[in-house]
Amino acid sequence: MFDKLKKAAEEAGKRATTTAAKKAAGEVAGKISDAAIKSKTPEAKGDPKEVAIRAYECLQKGDRKGWLETLSLQLQKTVDVGGSASYWWKTGRHYVEDYGVYYEFQKEDRAPFPDQRKFFFKRKNPDGSDRGAPVPCTVRIDEDGVWRVDQQSV
Image 1: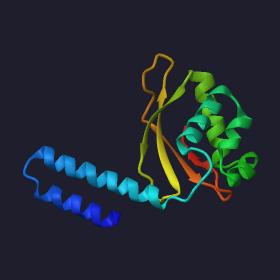
Image 2: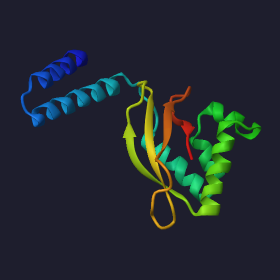
Image 3: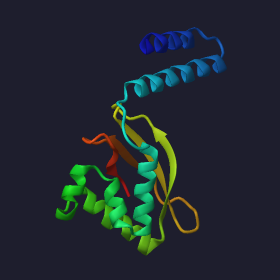
């Protein structure tokens, strides 16, 4: 059903004669795609955006226990033996403690799988200016049906 609607919106965009009509058709096609993805997403506990925001909030506060709870179960098991999650914590805390950096939610972007969400956060200097490019954070439905972080850039 969603595929037919999306195709119809895309065809309308091709036939449109004004820029505004083409843009509107493109927006409709995008919304139909988003609805299709959400309709295929399995039920999960929690809100993926809130999980991503909480991960950065805990990182900023130095709340390692709270931050760990936002990570996937697999990452929780391996964080103390090195690897990506250990790097995220050490590097993120370094930016916060040594440079006064903080993270601010920017947007949600499309993710390639229905059980995954991708968010971007702005890394900010203490004066509010941007520090580099926005950083991504992906959240996925974990094996126990809970949304958890599976990749966090700092």
